[in-house]
Image (cartoon, rainbow, N blue to C red):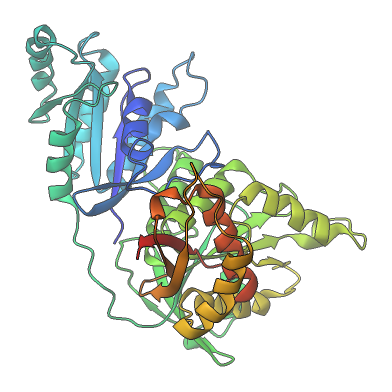
Length: 433
């Protein structure tokens, strides 16, 4: 069950600063890889063993000079529908504005827990000014300074109390989520897979209210498909499609074992696709990429190679991902998507015997040991796989603190070269022997 915390409010109240504090500055806990595009507006955070996704709605309001009040309103409505908890940010230095009032009246109608977060309370004098925000009628207020971080701990202590417990799934079948931006062909591929013969399929009401779980049991395959496409009840607002699809995707992604990321061959891989990919990677899911509408591309004998290369460059450093080119309308390679998803699922749950790991990895390490630092040499004695949802390996050595990031990458690449791990997120740890 995914917990989503949405930060809402008018522009320039400090939403992005709080978002950065919750996602980026907790690097010790949240694996945040470089190479993630700067325009990401959703990330993973953790507080007292609760993992959750944070969404900064501010990133979705176009042209910040020209405040699109309608867009802000839409996002608040979507957040009320989709998020687990809403942080409503206001600015103590400007007091209550008309737009704050309008957002508050929308939030009062919703049933989600709302925290009024009064930002920029940097000294005692401003604390009494903050009491003005009780007039919004949303209960308790939380004074913070998102620049210095003061008050955020107390806020998060209360926020996590509203999270739904993460129950392990009873259903042991593999779960594959089909995700991607609107109009890339998610519905079409599901219809192509299921065909007309709908009696093979038993839709099971999803754990979340809106993603539908469909059991696929034919051609020797048996798994759950999580469909994120076009299931939304239309609300009165004209929906903010991109923002809505991100909310939907995050929920499906957190439930899935393997994420099938569909992209449009004509438009290529875009920043939102890369964001979703990195979110899947951070959640340690298996990933494969499906390039749909391939029939619309003019081809020569190099087209596939060039296209694959461009995708892998944009996904770096994690580029060991299967890529399948499909045309759903022409029914081309649709079943290959399922075969590949099954392979990624196997790779993600692969267990490698300790003897085999040591036989292969120790000679490689002997030939390419970690570089010495200040005359100190790291000696790696032994390697073993740790139990986990995705492949995790512990390398026992004398001085783990001297092993730097490039060597982690080197070891990961060697593991991938020697063992079938394509599409799986690999974690490497160096531990004191």
